[in-house]
Every structure is written in structure tokens, then in C-alpha cells.
Length: 207
Image 1 (cartoon, rainbow, N blue to C red):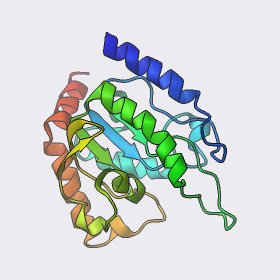
Image 2 (cartoon, rainbow, N blue to C red):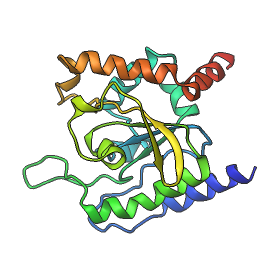
Image 3 (cartoon, rainbow, N blue to C red):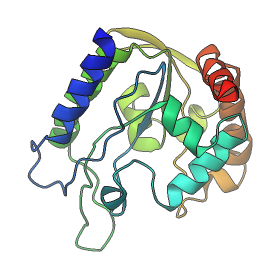
């Protein structure tokens, strides 16, 4: 009960955050959910704010197709796994029309929310999705060097397994050609075998 109250208070505080003046609100957060599976996205796109949930647009369709192949459809995943992000607001557009990459101060500001979530949830399986999220957890590097593998890490004082995924953006071709196809399959296989993921699948099957 204490943990449930803690995550409810946390989400309420997160949704009121105004630390980053260049960010475009609203804050896009998950509902107050206790879970041992913790997914980290990059930042919401321009559409997620209107829907009020992460991965609500085209990239989400691809992401949830991936998860459905290993036992959880979109509704099940959203109801059982905690969805976070490096930054929880849309960063806005660049002068050339692309999505702006969050700056180091914005990433640092938002990391306090992630630290609080780790403290409350104590996740056992962490799934960073996309290069920006992977860098926050595993450091800078090439996708080919980390996708398909499982890493044991201590994040915000919590021991956990990290299994990264590429970003499911429609603009990306990385996961649509080799070695991305094979490495994505390997990552999904690693996730499907993890005890924390298997526990969610069992809960979903029980309804």
C-alpha cells in the first residue's frame, strides 16, 4: 500500500512539472502503476500530449507489434509495465522541422523523476528504447554493439537487467535490414525469457 501511494504521489508531482521552459507540454507520463518491468523511451512526439500516453502514435504501433510476438499486446503491456522516458515532454521542433533533441540540462532535470521511479518500483527488467534512452543507461556506442544483448547494471542504486531495443520510428531503417533484423529478434527473445517479463505474461493470461 505504501508503494502504491508513493507512485500515485510521484505521478501527480511529475504531471505538474514545469522545470524546462523550452519543452512543450503537457507532461506525458504513465499511470500510477507498480511493475518490475520498466521501459524507457526517448521523449514524446508531437501527438502524444493530445492522447495523454507514451507511444500513442505510429512508432507505438510498431513497438507493440514487437511486444505482441512475445506475449503481451498493447493493452496488456500498458496495464502491466511501467512506461517512462528520458524526457517526459515534447522537446519541440528545430528550425528545419525535425524534432529537437533534448539538451543536457533538460535530460538532467528529468532524470530526477526516473531516479524516484527506480526508488519506488525497484525494477528488475529495464528496456531502453532508442539511442538516446540507451545512452542514458549504457553510455554512448553503436546500436550494433548493444542490441541483442542483456546487461547487468546498477541504476539509481537498483540492481537490474537491461535489454535495449532500437527505436521503432517509421523513419528508421535500422531494424528493417541486417544485422538489425537479427539483433532485434535476439533482444525480443532475451526479453521473453526474463523472469520479470514472464511474470507479466502469466498475469495477462490469467486476466
